[in-house]
Length: 294
Image (tube, rainbow, N blue to C red; front, side):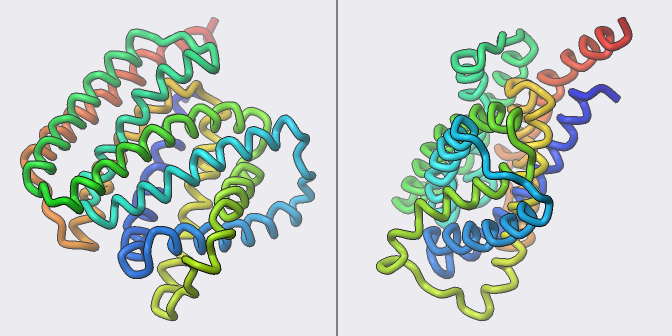
């Protein structure tokens, strides 16, 4: 198995884990607000990752690496607050589908900031998958056009733009820091962004929220570490389409946890999304294998 394919599979696993975490965070956001859900997830994640960081004997990063941690943490932190605020107001499948704009944006950001050459396969795959996103969004918005749903959808779209930027920074970040360090500073920076508002917006989690919160913390750490490992071994444009697989998990989690149904629009869109992922990665793998064989 090539390094690129292995990275793709690890990234896909990370996205699946993250989507299960989304379901826990959606319920926490409904119960206590997106701010509190993200705040306590970040504080708990920073504490756990900090213990692991020290136990492994890791050193404080140099300033150039620290700047990458800060930049990605700010982009990711702003994105997750917007996303979970929106997710509390729309079905999971719709919210996740709208964030699928991020991989398409990331393709062009990768070319602009990382100097990556955009391959035809990556563009074709993203276009196909994006068509699927449009089908899903059209069907879901038609089903629920309330003010809250519209605002939630707009929040998810804004989150997707910020998330695209965080994906590009993750590619650079993962090349100079290991997964433990990436996970630690992601939680530290996001927690640091939110803590100043805690005296006014913060609330201690209720007892019934502690177990879901712990689950969200552990799943978030596992997802971040998996994605950091993958992005250290493959280009952003190759891994970005894997984000589309989150839709299948989101639809399933939304149905199981919240009784949300999936429309025919969503099913058609999902098929297009999966097809786009296959096209984007399938033509890339043989090229890497032939180079290795040479």
